[in-house]
Length: 120
Image 1 (cartoon, rainbow, N blue to C red):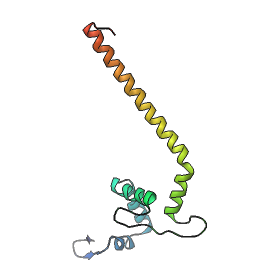
Image 2 (image 1 turned 90 degrees about the horizontal axis):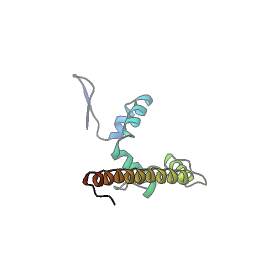
Image 3 (image 1 turned 45 degrees about the vertical axis):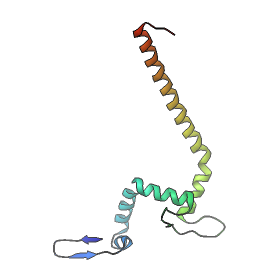
Image 4 (image 1 turned 135 degrees about the vertical axis):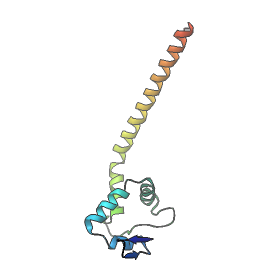
């Protein structure tokens, strides 16, 4: 990885984490917010939340105290506490899609039979 600062000087960064060390806190947050919306990043984060590590075995820091205190542990706790609400919302969304598909199918079946004069 190579980071060019200007046309007269460049810095070679061997690890992506080194790039973060060169950035201000605000710049880090801006970068992280942008990355957090990318599908590949979301997959790696969800792998950590579900399986404890990414597909390549990487994971964030975990503590072993009585209560969760790392971002990963707090995210897992938040998911557990909200799982019923999340499941309910997903079921509602899926039922709405099924209803919409049934209405669309009925519309086209009725239109086909009306045009052909074949009523069922």
